[in-house]
Length: 374
Figure (spheres, rainbow, N blue to C red):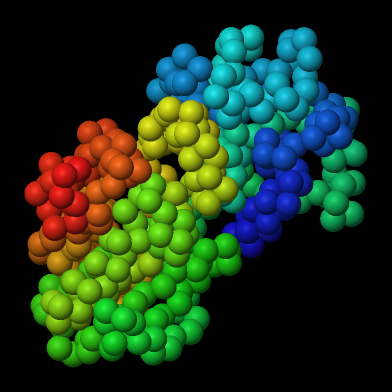
């Protein structure tokens, strides 16, 4: 999988990569930050017009319902094949209707979107089939190191390939205001893009049979800066205090900003929310589903800590299901709230009504996290 990891690095730099699927070679370029020069080079190198691969979430917004995860919009008949129009189609709030009907995505197309997600970019890609007349030119680029080639089947499974390969890198004692006896353990994924922290609170020898556990997705704006748009920072600090009061346990601080879409896309979604969309609809405009997080890394971290049975601090039923699917015995659940504010009310309401989070108590003003009179 080293080639796939290199491909992710190139894609994040805005470079094309070649995906090989049998006798079909496909050039892939991220839509994010594409410019006219890159578009011209892609067409010249492939010798064929590109298509725009979009997720089913984005296509649903364009009025095209799919039973697959992605489809390809042919671009050869667009009157003007320019960057502005491509961006409007890929992630614009108003894409218009002037595009050809989508066609079935190939394995390479699906793999291209998977690479974009893994690279934390907009889940949209330009893909161009390499014409027969262009094969020699493409092969020379590969041989010279100017173009990286990877198997589409490997790229398509790049999320699963990281399973079981998490490495504990370092650890240290870090006394916290709400849990003085705490240790931080840093785990790194094999591609090096994501690092996760296990906060071990108290003495593991004294823990309960069902270890108190919080899975907390990183939120720079809420955790560090105290953003009022969410309740993440208060949930984080309340979880640390609750785990300490329960006799100790673990908080897994997971690099899953913006429900897995990354900080750049989260800020894009915030801008769309300012125009009136809720948090889930804003993510869909960008091509994402309602929750892009994967919890295999949490299961791997628990295995490294020799934890098999937990009491989970969460309001999210998906986290419960993911741990159970990963072989963790979830013995009990404890609710965990932040403070309800005027600024986060719409966010929490969308999570409750549309994503099934168990937030009735805080939304109805019955929890200790709710201010009087709101």
